[in-house]
Length: 220
Image (cartoon, rainbow, N blue to C red; front, side, top):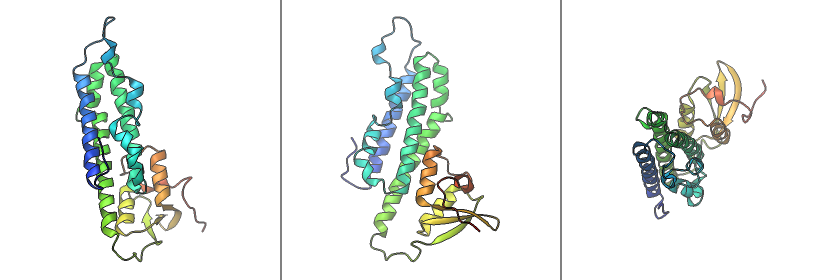
């Protein structure tokens, strides 16, 4: 059970809860047999339950006590990654219950999509932990002169680079340029909104892909 007794330790608990759930599903697939007419359905995982990201221990925490951390930019990305993980897990259960164990095993092997999404979820949890640590360490520091500042970035730079720039320099918005042409301004909120809308967990794609509906545009 994930408890809020320590602001940093909760992320370790969350990772442990996720790993235990992941191991449970792995064992379910590996120990499954080809279903028959007389198969006992009582031990069969329900796809609807598996696909529901609110039911696992990590999900129950995210949407209850964990929601107090929703001020962290990385927390919204964590929620999106957790949703993708459960959709992938439901796919694993679907193939297992259908007797297509080989396809389920392809998803859960170390190079499979399920394992990769799981790794990204753990990365998201670690990012939340690091961001919370940085926030706590910065509480006693004087207000940064960069608050409210807008920095520029080339449209071909990655989203990861943009987020790191905003965190490292403590800035709230980025002006995105294509050569010398300003194509828009991205705020923290617009970046997070687009990442969730696109269900993106890989942050290595160009920042220009996020310049869209939720971008603040500036006319020349």
